[in-house]
Image (cartoon, rainbow, N blue to C red; front, side):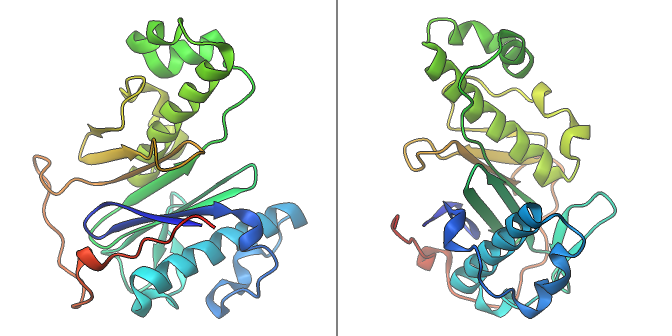
Length: 228
């Protein structure tokens, strides 16, 4: 498991799903998997367990808050609308994110075996030729990195696929950038699996700084847990 902090008061946790599989759900999460097929239910509960662990590490006072969703399906912590949360899972890997002062989105993507040329052009647009010189496996991995950043952005915005993530300008090889009022960061060099996070940029034009949470530990004390 690894915990990363791409900005003050923003944290991302990532690890293998088996770390959180089979754990007893937190009282607030018992109903999270009701009515889901067994495999989907296990995935949902593992994501919630990962989120709870991140909350305990970063802001213990939020760890027991119920998770609710808005009409678009974006999750929030009940009673703490100023804090953003996000969960992602793909092929046995789970990621969770917390931002204390606004929306956040996280996305983890295992690279496919190959990347269809049409998908590369759709997601990279004018940057697509940069992938032509890569080997097929490298091209697929680069597409996964780009898509993780695009998906993190629309998850932060709460729009999902309706936000047309493939239209977000993410150049190949880039580790950070901005989209609308959000800043995105790809954890290249820090995560073996393509992993990106997007969060509210406090210096973006028109952004109103949200009210702070109650006093807590300083950002400099953000936990970093080595892989393991």
